[in-house]
Length: 164
Image (cartoon, rainbow, N blue to C red; front, side):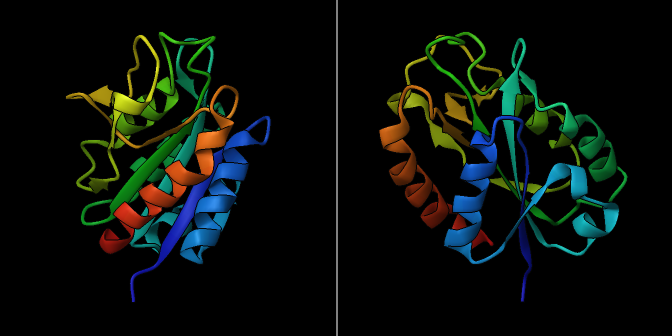
């Protein structure tokens, strides 16, 4: 049986809350990236990775060490799904850019990425997390669109589940 884990980086608790929700729906563990080790990565087939966005569209600070750990592992053949939290109103030009930064750090790892999301239901001006008109993962805006979070998570989990 394939193993799945949700790993997140969060300062304010928003990304952690989203991670816990995703993990509960999948019946798997959620873990703070601070607690992640190479064994964590190596012992799971599916990695669901989440980050909040800070500064000018950067991933959560703890992910910088987390990315180094992941890059030290063999990710070939693993399935990766990404999610990110951000503020599309106040940071419209860098919305969930941290998710894009995380994707760019791992895209050449040999892993298979799933869970891209159409940009049509989001209001923002630019994002490094958009490639070919699609977000590289699930964007969540708990500040301006909290009422959409549960449905967005449910639909995304239903879409990625067959790949896990």
